[in-house]
Length: 252
Image (cartoon, rainbow, N blue to C red; front, side, top):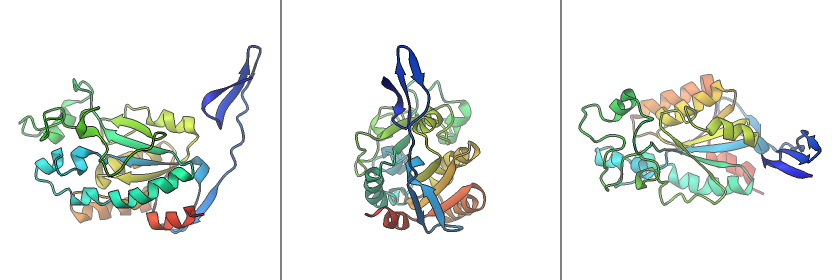
């Protein structure tokens, strides 16, 4: 028999004359930690973390946002806690998914409405135009779309390009998560009130359990935007916890 599948827990045993569709049993790994609005238990064996847009154009001092005059200090705040949390999650076999804005070089996946958000005056300082370093703004495969140097992905991490505020729109994210057998999603990254929130909301609409790791997420917008986002998550979409509380439960 040969095993076919993206992971062991989602695989068949097959031979020339037999297909066994019974998946191997995956024992739950329940953890409990403090969260808002209440204590939270979830299954690490069915959990992944989605890290949104921790890339040069949003978080680097020579990136696009900084060149536009945006104070990127808040966008860099998640770096330090992620440097601690992500290795601990990897040790617990929790998939790390890097969801970065990366548009096509020909911009054929961008509507006028999307381009207008970032280039409202039509002055060619928007998506796909040359950025401050010469790299094309938010273009897949460019320096602009690369994860910041302080957050080094591991070989087994998963990378997905998006070209909307939601990482589920016109991407393979949902298919990958379902093949992994994931039901619970941790969220981190920037901007909290934009791409993080919209991806989290779409995940909730699709039936995933959604949890924001609040010290690993931030926004360059005014503080009331973050406050409103967290209020909406705790009231409507799921739960909010701190990486420090999660780390206590991940420790041996």
